[in-house]
Every structure is written in structure tokens, then in C-alpha cells.
Amino acid sequence: MSEVIVIGGGLAGLAAAAALGSAGHSVTLFEGRPFPGGRATSYEIGTATEAELIDNCQHILLRCCGNLLDFYRRLGVEKDIEFHREFTFIEPGGQSSVLKSGVLPAPAHFTEAFVKLTFLTLGEKIAVGRALLAMEGEKDRADLDRITMLDWLREKKQPAQAIERFWRQILVSAINEELDGMAASHGLQVFRLGFLARKDAYHMGIPNVPLGELYSSEIWKRFGNVQLHLRTPITRVNIENDRVRSVVAGGPEGEREHSADFYISAVSFERIPAVIPGLAIDVSPFAHSPITGIHLWFDRAITNLPHATLLDRTIQWMFNKRDGRYLQLVVSASRSLVEMPRAEVIALALRELREFFPAVADAKLEKAHVVKEIRATFSAKPGLEPLRPVAKTAVSNLFLAGDWTRSGWPSTMEGAVRSGHIAAEAVAEAAGQRAKFLIPDIA
Image (cartoon, rainbow, N blue to C red; front, side):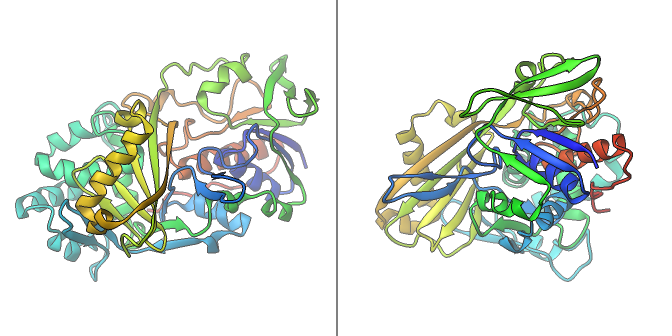
């Protein structure tokens, strides 16, 4: 079997390492941070005596995320994902509605719950239903990557409140981009795969352990042929005669050169020019979209809901992390918060939470933490899909992975893992091995 070096320990790199390791290849992964997981990880905050392990931001998956679930199975951590079958929508003032599958088969399985939603009028529900029914016939349209999701919704005559309270509420959180900034192809994909394809496809998986524990160094010991080197960034990739000759890794002991048969770059797009200057890939069309996570600890329980999506306000999601006293709030595509001071972000969160959970008014905020992931994802804008690079490069033994590459998905955990599986298949093929790692999307 071959020796493979993976550059980058985010989900794409980890997925490639796990797939190749399970197929018998010897894999060495280099990651500059002191922990694996990239933008989906955990770290400690607070003092040495009162340390708190938190996720940088709440990450979730759906049952339609076949590659991510396969990755968790390879690591033996699938038991640490708890699936939920109900989505609670809360309006300012506290009125709530629940979206869940009913007795009808897919794609009509939400009909019973949809009829009972209080945050849409009957006319708005009928309009949304018409658009959902139109999706299957739209999947082969040639222009869906060139128009925005908002263009498509207006084309389908969606009322303004339905756009804001239903379509935007779901899609901005799923794709981390505003409706007028995301390609319609991505928006339709979310609904076709996550909501319409199968009755259980929408089930939301939430890790019941800190994200970092899903791929900690201890877990990788099950792979005797996979080694992770943390705090060891790759600073240079040496290319000669259209092949990678070696990589140079930094670290506590200084720079060292390493070589292998094959190489996978799983770094983010903005790092490509510095790390692999010899690779002719134009990353200028790519831009970032931020996510903000707001962690709040109260002196008493605020809610007994495990999670809820909050309508008509800046805060989009609430996750109950511990006993209703520790809540994590998420704002996707959070450009309005990037320059806002920490104290103002917390004040905004508390002000909005009171509109949904009255107990906040009488509770004492014991501590708070704000995480602004400025480079959380790439912006899934129209026209970008053809520019996303494939796994194979002009350098014969170098392959690309990363959520920004052409995975078939937008910038999500599933997209990142898909890219890792695609790159691993390309390495296996180059090594003369027939291996299938990519899990096809559900029909």
C-alpha cells in the first residue's frame, strides 16, 4: 500500500485520512492547530480552575448526510450523535409551532404538521406547497447555478412573509448565506434531499459530546496506520517535474521535510497560494461568509426545549446545551455582527431572547462568550459552482479536498467529508486500488 500525506486536519482531511487508513494505506496528517476538526471543533475557555469546554459554534447534521455519518461510523462515534424528529419554530411573544413527519409517505409527510403551523397564513402555506411540489421538475434546469434562491422564490410567486419566515429561516442556516446571495441550485438541493426525499431525511443530529471529542487523538489509535501531527503546519509544498517531491512542516522543533507517494491538500482556499504557490488555481472568485455563536450561562433554567428556531429576529437558532441554563445561539451569514462589540452582541441576544423565553427577564446572566467565525464557510453565490476545483490537479500525485472544492454540496460538514472521500478515491485509483468511499446522495 501507499504512503499518503494529508495537509490539514479539518473534516475534509480527517475524512480522507480515515478512508485511506481503513483501506490499508499509511497516512500522515499535519495540522497547524493544537486540535483536529478545523472550523468544527471545541476548545476551553475560562480559567484553569473554572475551564469550560465549548464548541466554536453549534454544528448539526441531517440523516441525509450519508458521508458524514459514514465518517462517524469509521471513527466509532456514531453513538454520540442524538437525532431529533421535531423542529420548533417560535414567534416573538412565545407562540410555537412544530414541524415533524406525519403518517403520509414522502414527499407529503409534513402535510399534517404544515397545516398546523401558526406563523404562516393559509395562503402562504398554499404558496409554499406549490413551490415544494415544483422542485422535482426543476432539478434539471440549466440556469439554477446562475440565479439566486430569491430569484427562484419570486419566480414561484412566494409571499414576502413566507420567504422571510419559512424559506429564509431554513436556508440561511443550512447554507450560511442570504437568499439573494446563494445560488438557487444549493437552496433546492437542501429541500430535495433534507425535506422531500425520505420521511426521516430531515431528522436533525446534534452531537451529545463536544465536537472535538468526535475525532480526538485517542480515537485515531484504532487506525494503526494513521498518524496525526498537531501544532505542525505545512509551510511549503515542493513541486518538481509536475510531481510533489516533499512538504516542509514547521513545529516546536523547527522545520522538517517529509515525503510520501501521494499528497492531499485539505487546506482552505485562501491558504492555497501561500502553501502551494506552484498550483495554478485561481481562488479569487471565492469569498467568505461568517457565522456567530453566542454562548450564555444563566443562574436558572430558561427553557426545556432541546432547540428552537426563532423567527423575525437576528438570532436564528437556540440550542439547549445543559439543563436549560447554558444556551448556545447561532446567527448564520452574520455580517451585521462582525464589527459589533462583544457587549453589544450579548445585549442584543438577551433582548431578543426575552421575546421568546420570558424566564430570561428574571434570570441572572453568569457569563457569556461570543465566537465570530469570520471565515466560517465560502459564500455559495451564483456562478461559483463551475469554478470549484475537482480533486485531481495538474500535479500528478497531488489531490485537493476541502468544502470549497467540487463536492456536489455547499460548504457544510457533509460537503467537507464528501470532498475528503472523493480525494481518497482519487488517491486509491492512482495507487492502482479500486476503492469506493463516497456515499451517494439519497434518491
